[in-house]
Length: 178
Image 1 (cartoon, helix red, strand yellow):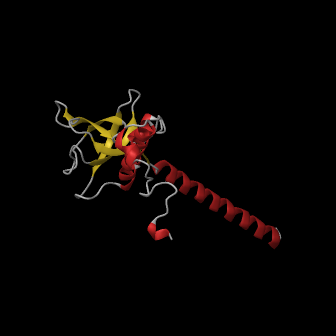
Image 2 (tube, one colour):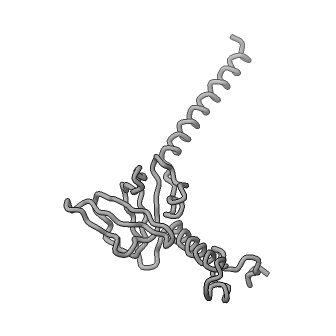
Image 3 (tube, one colour):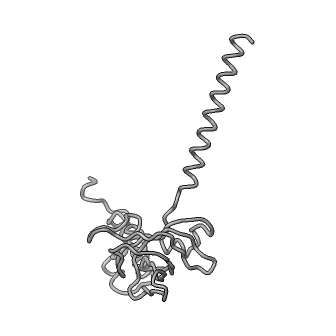
């Protein structure tokens, strides 16, 4: 075998090994990805029907029900517009409370009940997962915009509800953007 053929063979083998390593890394990353969805997105069927994902929002007041076995419980996660019933078996975080922020990881059952394998609660008085906080802001802003579009009440007269997620009315200049 000539040195030129040997070099070409070594280069091809090296590229093959690099491609195999990249494929293994990408496969590992793909299998460990867990996406976040809001109850509104779950209701709109944007969440995967099979496979794991996270749902986040607030624990609806009065929805926490403990089962007789002491470990299983049911609660409802809401973003103030839509709600998702959740079933969880295990110990809850100490800071888990009704009306507080929560993120549950698991799968959506065929009956529409989210089967949580993990529940995460906020860890101090001012913290909520950024995804959950943004989702709640978008959901309440969307609900206000719907109220304003239907011509109801003060939301239309005062211009409330037309704010975007950035906190300014669409088309308005922010003071710091000049």
